[in-house]
Image 1 (cartoon, rainbow, N blue to C red):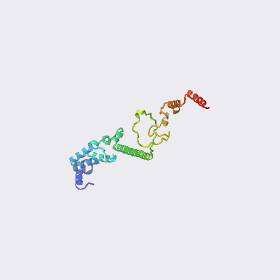
Image 2 (cartoon, rainbow, N blue to C red; image 1 turned 30 degrees about the horizontal axis):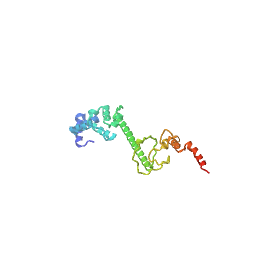
Image 3 (cartoon, rainbow, N blue to C red; image 1 turned 90 degrees about the horizontal axis):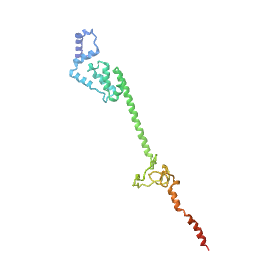
Image 4 (cartoon, one colour; image 1 turned 180 degrees about the vertical axis):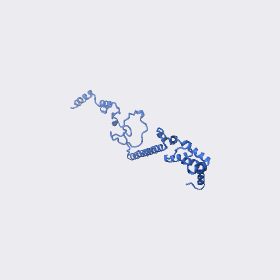
Amino acid sequence: MLQERADVWWSSLLRTHFEDGAVDVTWDAFVRLFRAKFVPEHIQDKMEQEFLSLTQGSMTVLEYEARFSELSKYAPHIVEDERRKTKKFVMRLKPSLRTRLVAFDHCTLDEALSAACRQEGEMEQYLEEKKASQKRPAASFQRQDKNKTVYQTPQKPVAVSNSQVPSVRSPSVKKECPHCGKTHGGSECWLVAGRCLKCGSSDHKIKDCPRLQQGAQRGAPTPAVAAAAPATGRLGRP
């Protein structure tokens, strides 16, 4: 409802331009005439420039569309064509949404708005699910840290040469290995690795170890000595 000055202006305009209301006036035509009368030209230019540079930025899709529609009134020569207006709306969306919509030919602004809102909702749901999934492993690791034991056996045995073994040993007390029963500390357990328990070689087992066979040969008496010992004992008896 027009009041005071605006009402007087409109009544005069109807008499002089529209035959006192006999000629129908569209809403768009009224808005153009009204702004030309009551909105200064420099204000209209400012609002038009703001529309031309408008982007979604941090606004939601609905907030962006509301601002887009409001400012588009100051640039009727740009938004007269519905396809052109719709394309401008899509191209000014944030990149994550624009790339999802630009491949589709939206004929009207309402179609583009509906698609943008739907994509925005799916993206928000995906980010929420991703954020929740990233929190669950952290809680699991905390529980594992509380129950972790001091001794850890490697899942996959790795052959380590003598040159790779560090010379500095930890002063902490060695614990008995639960696999072989020996106190070899944090070094590789030969039993788990399938090595010889005598020399650590991976070429044979302890029963075939050359060191054991050599030790057995050194400890056994020669046949000549073994035969001479009983004879000497018998000769010494009265």
